[in-house]
Image 1 (spheres, one colour):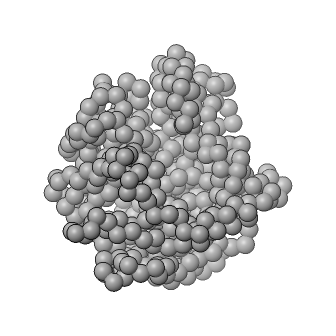
Image 2 (cartoon, one colour):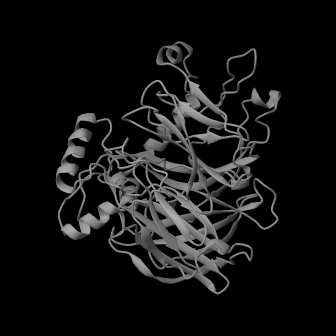
Image 3 (cartoon, one colour):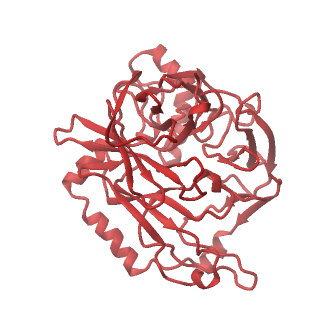
Length: 467
């Protein structure tokens, strides 16, 4: 990738002067409808989906095909990471929970399911200390003073201000090796085998010595949770921020096979800014230096005009995903998950509110670069799939290319769904495989154990598993 950085900046005063598009009455009505639908039963189900698992499934167990058949060109493992606090241990809310990886391996001899906590440095300290609270939560925004107090207490109790939960995202490498990531702290390296076994290899990996410890005393080494795989160069590109000393931004390039940092570029920024994610194109790394409230609408840079603005759809969605072959280029379509209700309070929070997600939506993006289409108010929803009755989506959509499929929707879309039983004690889960073209259901697999809410996922091809 050509190393040319584009930093998008907009000061608060300029942003206030320009303003954003007023939320149309139609969209306000949609949000009000979602909140109005969040009745007592929806609130109960939402909270139960936030409830973590109280035990692991270290011995892989069979996952049975309940409908359809697993495609012959879909062989590998789908992994889902997410916060999963143990019944005892750290304080804090759902987002502070220990990272737990759920894995379904699809092989010629059938499918297996397993799940395991990632054995991070903080996890090991809690295991050694025994039942009791060793760490306090750090994801307590906007309570800045409480955050500082908790970091100080963690240092006094565990000699580690920030708990390395590794609970946010995943990067798949070669030979079954994967990285469990969170913002700021060092990643946790683990392995997924073709038989479904999950095994932590290294807590606090330095990625071949590429993470500096000194500038990050609170976290022990900063690294973004969100890398983007360049399908041309096969590099992983991520933007990390520093809260303590310049440069406040850093672009890291990782070898997608070994996970080692191959080069790092410091980015001078005006001040420390939380950079949750970034983007890449064929020629640029795009750093969103925008400490503002973000509204989801399209900005098209166009010579004479500053921007053109329009909503792409009136459908509210979360966790958008595209075919990995289209990263950095004009993707013809995208997928996301759609909420059915929104509301709170959430006793496992933060987050203070939760959503019930009942559908996967496909968006047609093929006309976005057409001048006439860019001024249209037409909705770009191309297809949708609704979860079986009683089930709700608990993962982001994972897009897995078909063998010989066209980039974009020549792929499978995988999601986990879970049903909460009325007793509040039991849940059952499925892995659903959809066809990326029209979101028709290809197959369902019943899992031997439950999958609650989580965060990001990763697909590992069969050849890249440990054998």
